[in-house]
Structures are given as C-alpha cells and as structure tokens.
Length: 231
Image (tube, rainbow, N blue to C red):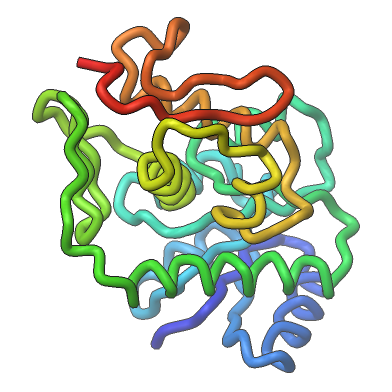
C-alpha cells in the first residue's frame, strides 16, 4: 500500500496524534515506532515522504536514514527534541532534507509536509525530458540523475531540486528568499539548512568545492549559477 507520509518515532502518543491529524487533512499517513517497524513497513508498503526521529528505542534515526538513502531517494524530514547545531548538521549531511524541532505545531508541520509533497509531485508532472549540459556537468531531469565527467553524483531529492532551480535560472542573483519560496516553498526554512545544501552541491559538482566556480555566493544576498565556469 502507498502512503503519502510515514512517521518513524518512538514517542507513540505523539506519532499517533500527528498521524491522525495528517489523515484528517487528506495526507495519507502511517506511524511506526521503531527501526524494526520501519524496515518491516518497507517490505510491503511504500511512502512519498518520511518524518524521522533521531532517538529510536531500537536504534538511531541517523543510521536508519543512511540505510534508507542507500536504496531510496525520497524526502526525509528529521523531527527531534535534540536542537543542537551539530545534530542538525549531521542530519542534513547524511541525507535529511530538513530538520524540525520538537515540540512542533501540527499545523506548521502539516504545511511543511504538504509543500514537500506538492514540490516533488509537481516535478513528476512537468515535462522533464531534457538533459542539461554545462561542460562536464550533466543533469538528466527525467531520471533525476547528475553526472560530472561521466561519473554519477548522488544527491538527495532536495539537493537535486535546488540544483535544478539554480541551473534553470543561470547567471543572475537568486536570493535566499527566492530559493525558500520556489525550492522549499516554505518560509520556515532556515539559512543553515540552505547553507548545508549548497555545500553538499558544491562537493558534488565543483572541481574544488572550497573555491567554487559554478555556484557563486553573493555576500548576504544569495547565490548565482555561472554557466561555462566549470570544466
């Protein structure tokens, strides 16, 4: 069976309340309460998006995220009471698309989930048959793959969406607000989340990520994708 959202959280009451709330607003959701429960879910069912807690009774959400990322490329939102910058950076670096702190507003969390579901659903509905080529960089929009000099580069769904927006708006300043509105479609996203995704993109497509040529930083404003700048 297919679900819009899978909640993986060992706080069963919170997970069940969130699940019930989402289902009330036509986001088909299922909750499981452990790493084992999540692995069992994927044996028979699938989902479009995951809400994942870091602390699970039988394992780490970080490790589960890595396992999921090794076989699937779907949006993962970490939801946790742990609020240190280190936790957030780790979550984004291992493949998380966003990080939501507990306690959260059910309405705000639902809005984030709906935005992300619309974002990836809209991408699938578009005509994305073209391939973007810029020197060694090649983007297959239909299959959502990226290669540099023929070598595949692994990106999360959000990283791919961010890269696609940058290359489709080349050689101009793209403000942070524009990226939040058009990639995340979410005004609650933080600068820190964007910065981590930009760094991950640079590591994937730049010859020297510390001295990027393709993705320029415009100080205090945003970013610019420069065509013809990389090999």
